Amino acid sequence: MTAPTRPVVFGGRAIARRLGRKGLPDWPIGEAWEVSDVEGAGAEVMDGPLAGRSLRSLVEDHPEELMGRGWRGAHFPVLTKFIDASGMLPVHLHADDETARRLEGAANGKTEAWHVLHAAPGATALCGVREGVDRERLHRALLAQDFDSVMRRLPVRPGETIYVPGGTLHSFGPDTLIYEIEQTSDVQQHAMRWRMEDGSPIDDEQWHANLEALLEEWRPGARPDFGPGLRIGVDDGVERVFLCAGPHFALERWRAGTAAPMRHAFSTAVVLSNVGTPVTVVCGEVTQELGRAESLLLPAAVGRMEIAGPADVLLGYLPDLDRDVREPLTAAGYGPESIAQLGEV
Image 1 (spheres, rainbow, N blue to C red):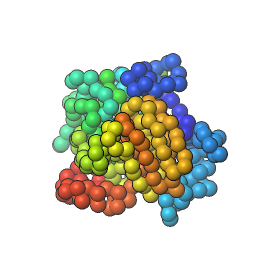
Image 2 (spheres, rainbow, N blue to C red):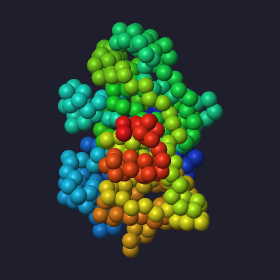
Image 3 (cartoon, one colour):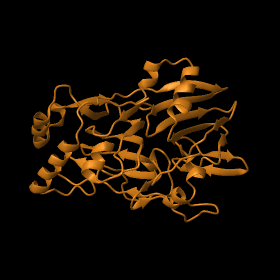
């Protein structure tokens, strides 16, 4: 599918240079949206008999073939992106579901997760506020742009993942390359005195209004941490890692050598993103080449995929938490406390 790229002030060229993505514009890119059904920034089918159709039209016309038996929804529920934080992202938050409906007039908010593909030594992220910080203290810190006095600064390491509930104040960068999975939404409130798109200044009246809106949507409780995920050996040289999971999405990373192919059955749509060398994806009678940092949307009706190694791919999807997450991890010997660390499981 084709989806937008965004020239934002914190972006660079890492998606092309480090991941090997081809066909990107020459200007610095902050975000490459892989599969999106956000209003005004939706993806379209690139190949096959449905070429040119929007993802939204597939949701409307073929909901069960796309998402699985009994599913209905107004839009595709999962949004995925590569994010190049060559510079620091603005400190911001996304409303949770209840707040987005109440204050933004939106169908849902945006819980998200970041999987770290690259981070320079010493890279950090800001995520959540310190315990004991109240609204008044946070407001003073935002006015002073003194984020470290109230926010948690966490070390960032390649291969780790953090699950960020809606309402959590956050930022990451510089020198960080992220794969992000999230609810389909673009609601957000920023704390900075500059615009994310071009770095131009925001006047005092608008900035103070932005801070008030952010404080109304802020939820103080979440203090998430990065983690390595939960690993399962699948076959000879084939590894499956559950990176994060919750009611809105799950993300896995699969690696395969050359002894056995990666084989996976699924019953809902899967966003397949390649973070390794080019691979060939086989789904029944259909074969598709998937280049570096490219993505495929595999509908539920396909049901099964096979990829010969070497392979290193990400699988994002809307899970049935019992069937897709708890059961395979429990069978592999993981207990409830370990599984709960993936997010909201």
